[in-house]
Image (cartoon, rainbow, N blue to C red; front, side, top):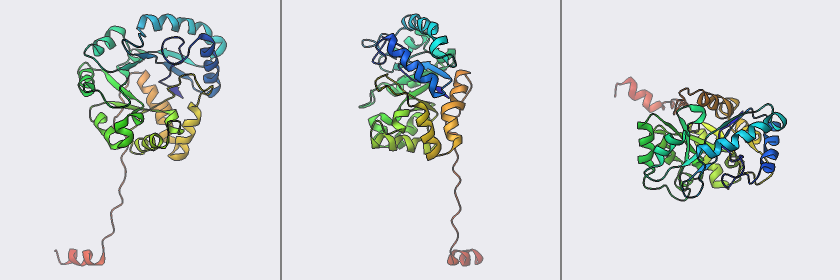
Length: 263
């Protein structure tokens, strides 16, 4: 299992507040069976100034703790970039927010209503060869009210990452329903904990088990292992990967008669 979205690095955003909290959660990750962890502190100029330089410095401190507290987990670091403002795409390049030096970038937007420049910024990212991953689409007002709106992003070559808390009902029934519908349609590509180190619980394996029970092993593995591994290797992931088979409707006796007479 691979967690591509969390806020476990200390002192950078609204996640872990100190090194002791981070150590506690690294131990929980180690016990969970997750084997790869991508640290993604918020990058939101004016609020969270998690530059590559700042993150790298803290990341080096955490690497020193790895052998003791999470020896079986591989660490990576990037950011969750808030898409807004004319300079943000240039910031992604300048700060090298590409996950494991791939073309994939984790992004977010306003939960209460998409900003006017969101689609234009995503277009700019695509033009520059980036592969945007939209964090927790099921939590955005537009999509939780109408999950079919998520298709707008897939048509723009944007990948979608579902939160474990959404799967487990932590954000309410409406968000959980939206998350399940996105998965059912084959519109979800990644699972992330979005862990902010507040509950004392790391719920990634529980969410994988729910997906396995609600859907099947294949979907659970795709979202938690297969697609995240491809991302880390900078391999292409299909935006649409599920084809639902339709069962032809049986013809009525009248339709068969009309077929016979060529009508």
